[in-house]
Image (cartoon, rainbow, N blue to C red; front, side):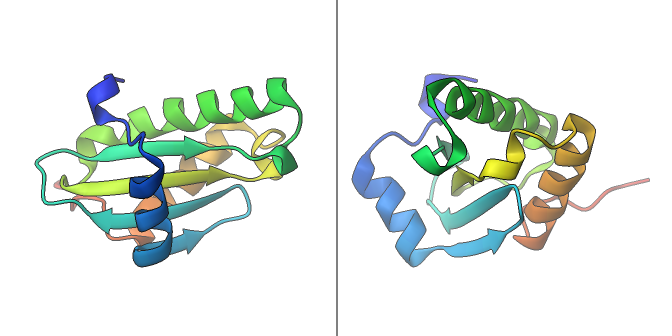
Length: 115
């Protein structure tokens, strides 16, 4: 994932978390806010409640990897903030992919599937 697609400034992340729409799952919280750009920017957060540094880094890597599965099928022009929760470490990866797809769909970010 290119660095230009990352949301890095604290004030931008705070703005998404306070002004944006949130969708909650047992494994992740997603905050969404339009950004008036042609790209989606993301931030991935894992607090100390997730575990020690190794577990937090694992959770963030897993979230970024799962996001890449959906990147091409998302509407563009949003800032996304993913907040990892403790169950993310233990859940099966395939189940997490499905859960993330559900959350992205709830947020209205998924493009319509053309079959």
